[in-house]
Length: 99
Image (cartoon, rainbow, N blue to C red; front, side, top):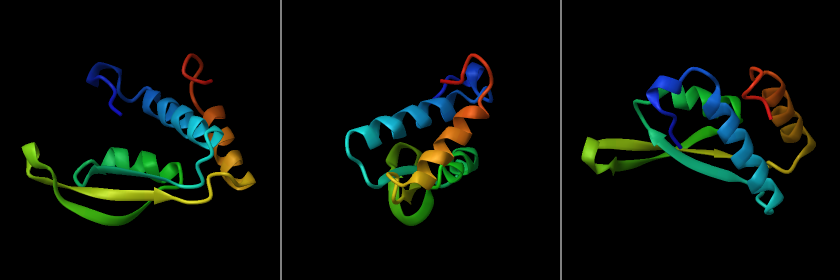
């Protein structure tokens, strides 16, 4: 997932991730994983707000950048607590980005 640099810091990635997670839950997911560049602190913070936590490293995953990937995971996305987390995140999005 990526947002054009001119559109960053407008919470678009939060909306995209929110919608991807809702779709995943509707399709029966119980857990979700992703990978992110180890140097991408902004994305890691975003994923942390959605309950993702680091669980491992994939060495030289981004070969063109010679950079490792941090594997992040969130469990129990079908719980009421997780649903409330997604609702809270959606409610905090700015008008025009909010679902």
